[in-house]
Length: 195
Ligand SMILES: CC(C)(COP(=O)(O)OP(=O)(O)OC[C@H]1O[C@@H](n2cnc3c(N)ncnc32)[C@H](O)[C@@H]1OP(=O)(O)O)[C@@H](O)C(=O)NCCC(=O)NCCS
Image 1 (cartoon, protein in one colour):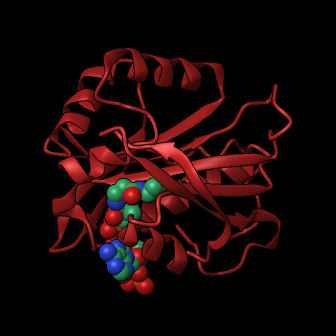
Image 2 (cartoon, rainbow, N blue to C red; image 1 turned 30 degrees about the horizontal axis):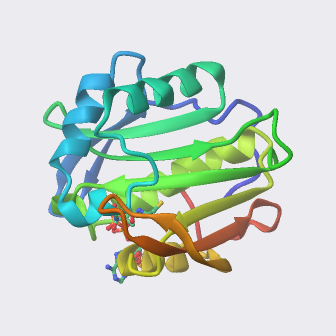
C-alpha cells in the first residue's frame, strides 16, 4: 500500500466498484442511521458465520454500541452495499484510552454470495488505509482455527499468526474455542495490500 494519507483515510467515498461477474457494489462509510440495514445483514448470515461473530451484531444494542464507537472515533467502518442491502463490511476498532491503542482490531465480513470475488480483500485494504491514517501501527484479526476461509484470506493479505490461545472464547452455541490472532505490521507495509 502507498504511504500514509494526510487525511483521516476517509476521502473518496462513496465508490462504485465491480466485483465477481461485474456486479456493482457501492463502497461507502457507515452512516449513523445504518442500524436497521446492519441488523438485516447480520440476521441473514448463515449459522456458521453467526457462530463465530466477535460480537453479536444481530442484537440492536450491540449495533447501537458499534455506531456509538464510530461516533466517538474508536471505530471506523466501511460498508459494501448492493441493491440497497449491505453485502459486507470492514471495520477497525481501537481505543485511545487503552494501552493497546497502537493496535487496531480489523473485522471483515462478506455475505456468502459475494465471497471469492475480491470484496473481502478490498474492504480490508480500505480499512488498512483508514487505520494507518489514524496512526495505528499494527492490525490484528481474531478468529477461531475453524474459520479456514478467514485464515486463508488474511494469510493471502500478508497477515501472520501472532498467537493461538486455547479455550479463549465461547462461540454462540456456548462451546469453548481456541482463538487465533493474526497480525500485520503497518510500519512494514508492502505492495500486497492496495486499494
Ligand atoms: C474472510 C472473508 C471476509 C473473505 O472475503 P472474500 O470476499 O471471500 O475475500 P476475497 O475474495 O477478497 O479473497 C481474499 C483472498 O483470500 C482467498 N480466500 C478467500 N476465501 C478463501 C477460502 N475459503 N479458502 C482459500 N482461500 C480463500 C482468496 O482466494 C483471495 O486470495 P487471492 O486474491 O490471492 O485469490 C469472508 O470469507 C467472510 O466474511 N468470512 C466470514 C467472516 C470471517 O471469518 N471474518 C474474519 C474474522 S475478522
